[in-house]
Amino acid sequence: MNGRTKLGVAALVVLLIGGLWLVAAPFVVGYQPLSKPWNDTIRNDVIAGASLAGVAFVALAVYVGDLLRELTRRRAAVER
Image 1 (cartoon, one colour):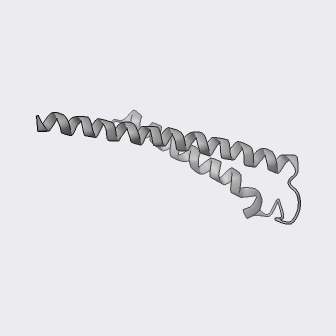
Image 2 (spheres, one colour):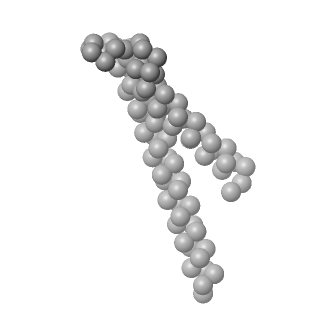
């Protein structure tokens, strides 16, 4: 894993954590009581955070899948 790959994976992890925070922050900080309906700001935070976290999660899953495929290919080449 080279430096650019590490930086990319680190950026995806930060984006995932940031997205999860956007989803959780209104409830953790207390901006949105659980018993009241959501206003537009809270709805926007939750949708944006879920979208950001979802894209980062899918990108990380694709990266891990590609890494596993590469490791499988290298093992098959060594066994020949």
